[in-house]
Image: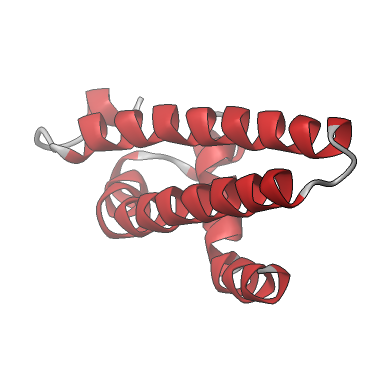
Length: 113
């Protein structure tokens, strides 16, 4: 919807799409590392793999949320009605909420590592 309504083409769309794919990949990797951790009864290597997967996920999400805030949300504010925002763009709203807590997540991850 945003792409169709955007006042001019924006290169952010292809970047955002690529980041969505990268997030899915990071989540898959994190899930696999958690399974490995459980199946190896908490080996040090498996623990390090979880830490690495979480760092990768955090890095891509931090970058993704920043780009959404800077380039996507201003466009959405111009072309999306409040009713549409509430029903069709719940994912964007969730992203905004998650973004508020990304620094909390980073702080938590520092304590885990």
